[in-house]
Amino acid sequence: MGFGPREEQKMKVVKFGGSSMADAGQYRKIREILMADPERRVVVVSAAGKRFSGDHKLTDLLYLCYAHIQYGVDCSGIFEMIASRYLDIRDELGLDLCLEPELAELKKRIDAKNISQEELVSRGEYFSAKLMAAYLGFQFVDAADWVKFNMDGTVNQEESYEALRHQALLGYGAVIPGFYGCMPDGTIHTFSRGGSDITGALAAAALDADVYENWTDVSGILMADPRIVDDPQAIPEVTYDELRELSYSGAQVLHEDSIFPVREKNIPVNIRNTNQPDAPGTMIRASFEMDQDPDRFITGITGKKDFSIISLSKRGMSNQVGVLRKVLTVLERHNISVDYVPNGIDNVSVVLPTHSIERDLYTIMAEIKKEAEPDTLDVHHHIAVVAAVGRKMAFRPGISGKIFAALGESGINIRMINQGPDELNIIFGVDNKDFKEAIRVLYNSFVTK
Ligand code: ASP
Image (cartoon, rainbow, N blue to C red):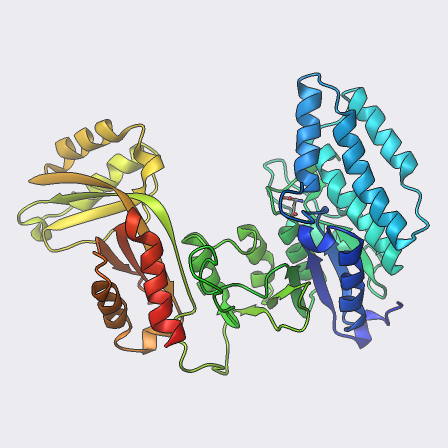
């Protein structure tokens, strides 16, 4: 599978998640996907994921292995499971790749307690990439040679991009392990869980890819959580801003930090399904010129449970200066960040995750009482926040009317309403117990009718 030089061709960076790397059958699917499009030349891979429900992710086994070392318990059984997952893939694909010496060396270091947790868990991606490179006949490019972290754990983008460009991989296909890089002293450092998405985004940005394709096991970002709504539709197009709203409010798609590098370079991201390669998936861009679907006003519906609302009222508050500041100062002192601040003329409320105020609640309430001197002060817990997100809502009257009418008809009481100034979302609070129903009602009134 040779590729022509970069100058002649467009180039896509393609990242495959754990379930796409779970066994030899998945490797074969990936090969097909790459053969279908010669622009797919730089491949970033996760560690082997679950093959079936109840199976283990390789990364989890590696963390478990490290825990055994920590407590001085023999981890040979788990190590055997890890090694055989990779050796089985190799044998089933008939690859001529000798992994045994490296695995034996790794086991020796584990037994001697001579390996850090981060280096050990990074080996999942490392062996995945070694195998995939051998299978495709691509070059293996170690992430430790180009993903450079600063001492504070952030990525030094400039140095990393420069280092990847120097890897002389541009004319050929390359496979890169995701999830890790190296610290200034050369030791291995990992991203947080799901971090191979970030490696893929960094590679795409470094190489000025035309597209960053992120291959997973769903046919794109879904309009609502499939555990709540039956068989929700995939979102065909979403902007980076909408995606930020959707993931902030609860939808889990890409690792949050993976958007920044590609966004900076305006590289579109395409979420695709390894098990359904013909589905177009979801395209993420800064903006879309053509409106593919003029009747679709809501891009996605999401939400989270367990918020609290602190409300206070004070007669004449609209004419007084600094009441809101005093409330926010108290919260700042306790290092609490506020999610929403809906207000009326003589009242204001702050909405924040319950867990963030639980510990200091009584002190916080006492301080607000003393410093802002409200007439009434209350707190309500067990609130769920639901967000309807859509870039086209701003140009369309009647959307919120439709949302609230639909909820009202279903007997769902709305506890709070908020809209961001960019009109990208409408956010409302309901009781935790109404959370799922609120999402279903919205989905059904906007999507299926
Ligand atoms: N293997 C790592 C994890 O399970 C990173 C990744 O797959 O993105 O979190």
